[in-house]
Image (cartoon, rainbow, N blue to C red; front, side):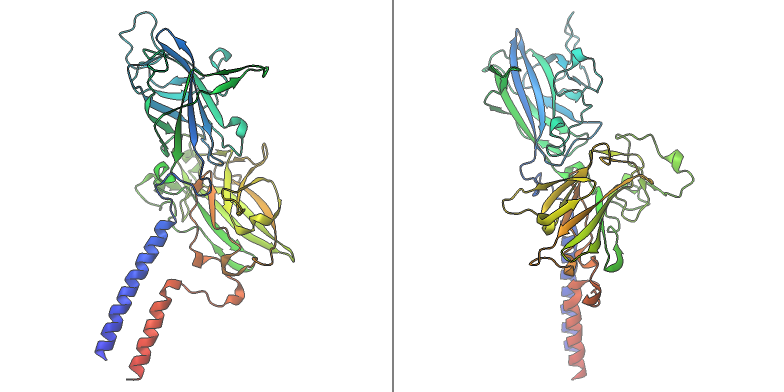
Length: 455
């Protein structure tokens, strides 16, 4: 009898260890990896095009343009910062549409002093309202770069640079190295500059085509893991057929009373709230409302109504950050019924189909001048909409959490979802198991009791 219990005990111990390992791996899989690859936007990137448009006695004049080819990820204020390292001893004589953050040591120059003499210059965009004689096309937006789908007219940013102490022919010019792009923090990784076919330009009257003397491209890709150590959003769920509200996972984006920045928060009922909240600035550190999840943004998916041929969902986006507004926000939602979306209220919609024949992903964003601006935490710090889906008899069901999204992105960042076994269940499905992975453990315990009773 002791041998049977000893063997059973060892088996249970191993199974529990294995179950714990599976739970650990599952929890790790809910966060993004370090790879700069997005399955919902596999070709998304920011491409930097450097066009040499004319030669000067000691160098060249170039127009540098950043194109945001990402469908839903954009760069908010205070905007992008672009850096690189010169291959030789180049200097920047002058700029239009942008400026370097530091001039560097230009003491060896007499009279005409360069704009920047640093070996590794850092360039930022000029602000709106810059005098016209300092502007070029697509400049002066404060570094804001909108996504390709949401606002294609503002998905590019340019500046002009006059480079000296450089080559004056295609064979003597050396491309810069070590490109970096901050937006405004880390997250983007840039590859090496590659010389490509010179860009062609069409004149305003469309009767003549000119081309650059030389062109090179730099491709930068985004990784959420590099951008921040913790997630920035989470998802909560509810339904009309179950009174349970599944909140965001506890400590999804950090925990309260922590020494880290993500742990600092203020209660919405605090009498000192007004004095604790700084001016609304996109560059201010986060000051979050105290919650169990400590995420700056929560997306709530509520299965609202069930009709004979349709079903309705309400989506609410809530901002818990007292120090940050979100302009030009967007959501990316993955659900198999988006191929039968019938009507959408107060949001813009565009299907994302990165793979042929699969239409299960939607990009949602606010209507211009109505709800495209998500206010800071407080009574006005939320936006919401309702979606009406047509049922497909071959796939539709409320069982096993089918009515809830597979994943949700906010502003291009993957949000933390509740564990699948916590989803609201239909009332007639019986008691919900606490942790389904422990079912083998209960089976072994029952077997041991049976053996003991029959010995």
